[in-house]
Length: 289
Length: 144
Image 1 (tube, chains in turn purple, red):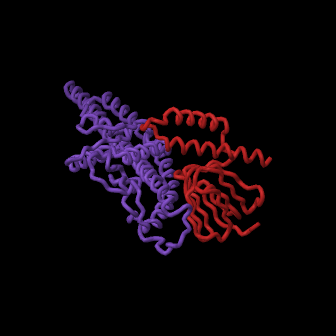
Image 2 (cartoon, each protein chain N blue to C red):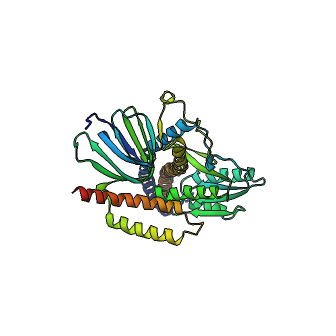
Image 3 (spheres, each protein chain N blue to C red):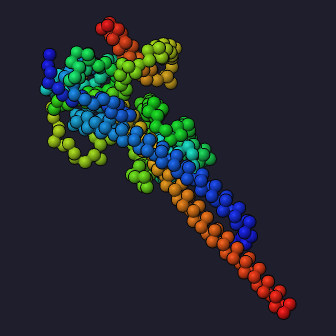
């Protein structure tokens, strides 16, 4: 540890500066977290209703290209990371999981990456997998039109048989302190989402379908794909802001601890200096006497 | 005219845009406009972009007009839920920019007719939405 009082004071000052910055970043992340979380919550009713309509049609056996499983030769993997760092293990977790997924699922299949977020690009641009597109200017903002474009591109590639499967890897938002990497097969769509508990099971009724059950389903499926992508991105971005807020909070606390320790050292050094001075004076007086 | 109220909600992917009691709704289904009153039979309708109008309980005759995008409508138990890509109240429409956007998209669509990379479906959808918005202005103008 530095013994010089001046030097310790300089370090305390510098740590205080850092603390101020991390505190500000925490505040910004908290504000963004609230905004994205509000958006995420506001988008829930639409998705819930859409799934309900889909479930109502699950019984009808209807053919649609999105439901058709084909031999997978090429797979589009959509990965959602953040554009900016300083958010703890958020990006490394998702990148590690994606890497593991790609290594486990490369037998006879060409994986093509669709990267959302600069951090994902930074990692995968130095790896073996071809990158189809990178979107690196969303900055954690939930922009419906931009996210829909991602879903539309995925559907386009799937229907034109350029890829036979689309997988999305993202981070699921559990709470401000908890977020989990997650993945799902976007296309082909698996019939009827089984993940919603049997709520509303009593509401199965005879609907009049206009123009027909088939017609409704044909329109419903693309909307559902868009909604799934939107939801995944919204959850990932909410997690990102949550992760940044938590990591900046702990950085601020760490800086506080460091300041405490340094202040202790400073006082100790000051006391040592005083003690030394006194003993010198006493020693001098003794010598004279 | 029926005065029995029922619930209407207009929901887009981003948020719930409108929620309230109404006495009648007219909406653009894929095969023509559909009118809904209270106690309508359970129905699910696919909707194209168009003009959605409804009469609120308070103002019986000055119906509200909205330009909506593609979507669905579900009616059951005196509840009408409209799920649409977008919904614009008439006061929110900026007609000049809509006209400009419409002209640009139409031109793009004409130029890229033979291009397989061009997503004509998206362009057509946007054109429909723009036309719906302009129609709101037209209807409002003619209603005087």
